Image 1: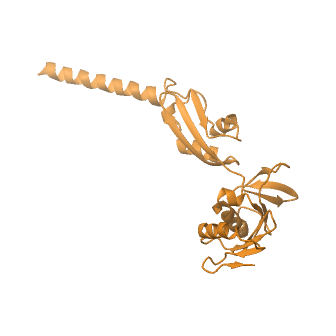
Image 2: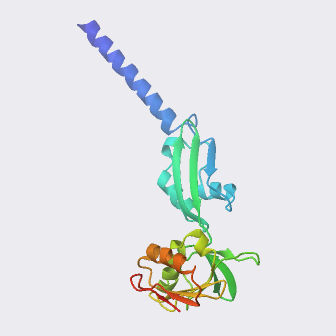
Length: 222
């Protein structure tokens, strides 16, 4: 009986020792520490800039990296729309980003800048940039007219969006598109934009100067 108790106790100690050693290796040692931070999805944002934003020191135990905090830090970069962070054992942290895409030009404080679909200013626009010009009273991410106009642009198929010269929005419900050939399309608000886009593409085959698709059920061509 004493031998059995001794064996059970020894086995318990050994098991506890193995678990404790494994816990130490995983959570506190650099054996399973971060050796590499792999970045994917970057085009305009330098990978090193994303690594600096991630802020994970080499050797940090991979299990103890707070993935959500890293994701938030990376997503805070101006040109990053979203980010995802994963562990890849034994020692790699994978950071995947989706960059913001310039959608329109806007004039802000005397500068011509590019904006993404959320109204985030991405930087000064070079002379070779060809995007529709946003015309609103106050181009900004928190401006309702800006958000409405950009939502309309984002809803357009690429081919149709490429034919736009300006998007004018004196109010969120009064969006007008001006094509590069001088024709205009009264859009109204952002409701039923996919349907309006299909109708407008069809109407543009007919010679006219203006098209009103603000009410898709009753369109007007002049």
